[in-house]
Image 1 (cartoon, helix red, strand yellow):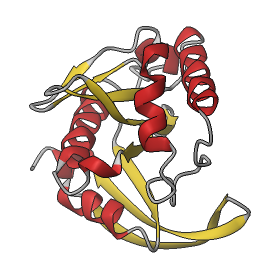
Image 2: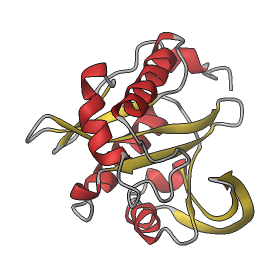
Image 3: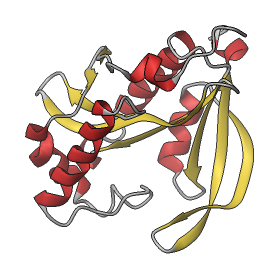
Length: 192
């Protein structure tokens, strides 16, 4: 157990990750208009922990916050760039990481224009590969609001196991929300 990593060991220089259809990369200020296009959609942000963007300034502030995390060597979000049009269409990353317990949690958001195409499944698989290979975790978790069937389907497609409902586990948008918990263990990942 001497090979416990520190967050800065992995996130000092967040690498780009390429999949068949996407590039997971650092966000840039030039992405603000693309972000605003999807983050201003109340249907897309219905289950996110962050509020619907009302102005382009909201998107710029979100990106500035992310850039600050890159600078501080903290866990941060990758922008999801669609290779076909080089457009930022969402974000994904690690919500939580406890190196001592070798456990992390993934999170993601995607423009509604790209739903039901398997893109978040593809991006989530890339995150899982990164978690087990680079972060040396034993367990990857994901949670979703109990009503968020789209997110739950992603968790199922990437091989995660449903563990149950965490009652009023998060406080989002002035409400306590029940969430479904899913996980994937390293020994299960190795068999996929």
